[in-house]
Image 1 (cartoon, helix red, strand yellow):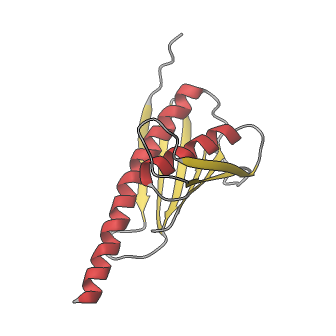
Image 2 (cartoon, one colour):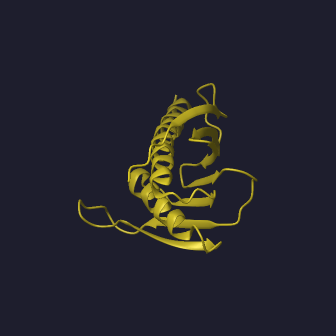
Image 3 (cartoon, helix red, strand yellow):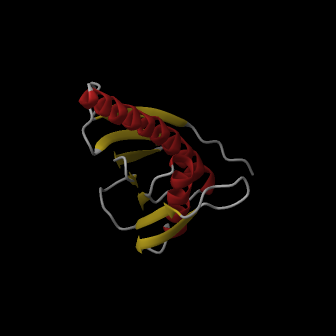
Length: 154
C-alpha cells in the first residue's frame, strides 16, 4: 500500500540575518505534512547541535544523543547513540535521527522527538527535510565562524 504524503513549508525563521557570528545559532521552521504541522527548533554551535521536533505542545518528553566514534567508512556506522530521557514510544526514531545528523554533519547531536506522527514514511520525509536544512545552517555557521576569525586576524 502506497502512502501519499504532501509536505509544504509554512514558516521558516532564523536568528541570523546579517553576516555576524552569534552562538548558539538558532533556527525555527514549521512544515505541514498532510494535515499535521510539524515544528522544528535547532540550536547550532561549532561543537554540537540540539534539535527539537514537535507537532503540538512544546515539551521535552524524550531526548537522545549521538557522537561520532570513528572516522566514517562507506559501509560502517560512525556514530553511537543513547536515550537520555525516554518516553518509550519514539526512542528508536530519535536515536536513529541523532545518528544520521552526526553522520551527515560530523558534530555531536541531541534530538528531542515530541511528535505523535508514528507513520514511518511521513517521519522519514520529515527527517530528510530537517537534515537538509541543518546541513545548510551548519555550513553557514562554519562560514560565519571563519569570517569572524579572519576579521580578528586583520
